[in-house]
Length: 94
Length: 151
Image 1 (spheres, rainbow over the protein chains, first blue to last red):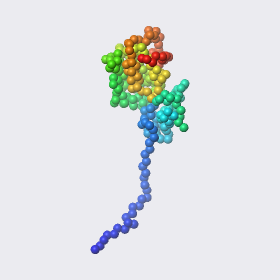
Image 2 (tube, each protein chain N blue to C red):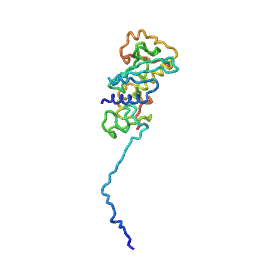
Image 3 (tube, rainbow over the protein chains, first blue to last red):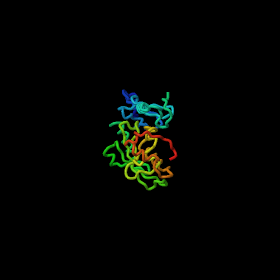
Image 4 (cartoon, chains in turn brown, cyan):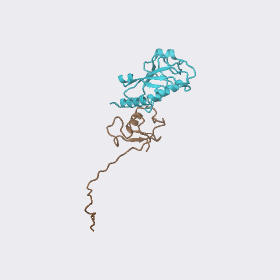
């Protein structure tokens, strides 16, 4: 009787390269920016690429926006700088 | 596309897909020009305006939504209401001082329906005659005083 013996060493697959695929999301309490209505995982209408070039910022009230959107709003306000969502005084969360 | 147009297209899409009761956008008006919308509004059931039909015009500047839209009643049925002048101008704080870029055409329409619905007596503002004679065509140029929150 003959038995086939598979030598594990000969059947080894060489792994020379591997390709990693990653995804990312902003961890925000909403899907869209309340100011521009674009997705948080996208960018504000003035930007081309999402991510670090068009980051999100949080207020102490816990509402969050694209930084470009909230700064544009705050700059347009002369007297009070209020959160567009809850109208509390806007303070950037440290 | 300008950011204002992007946002208006988003709003139009949402409003067309899921319009609130008694609010509908005149698509034809927008196909000509996205910066000027005609919106049809029905007086709410159970209110003094039940069965009445109104038309609102929204005009958006390039700075929308950072700048509030210009909103007024137009057409031959201007609601008789203590905060609505006979030329269609509306005294409503969210249209000027209390505007927020988180508001939208939908939320403005709902605020106006709600303002109409809480009315208990159909009458014009006390200063209607003098106001319509002297005001600017653009209601945003009026310096409004908001003092009466009851209606």
